[in-house]
Length: 137
Picture: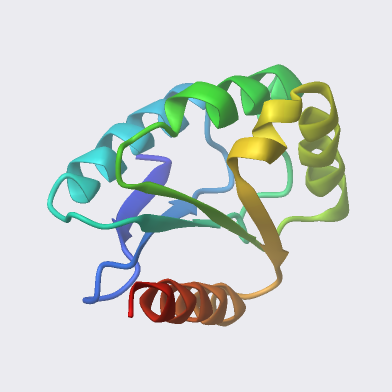
């Protein structure tokens, strides 16, 4: 499998996707299926951490595919809006930004954050969970 899917830690607040250097859009679709199986085991919003530190480019048709996945495939009932992308280079970040401008609902339905390290991503998830907890009390 070119994209590994796992809980980020034992608290099950975030699903982590770890991308191999080469992966395909079919790999991502399969990874979403694995992530949904994990999300089915909890009853609260689950954040996403996409670890792309090993990859430096995207498969073909990136803008179209990003729009398609961002608008429809990440639609699990427990999927939160927060998606933290780790280790994205400037070229890939530009493609994602372009897709967000073309497919405006992509930005409306998701809270995309870009960080350099997994530790930074985990801090964002921790902060988001703290905020969600304070809103419930």
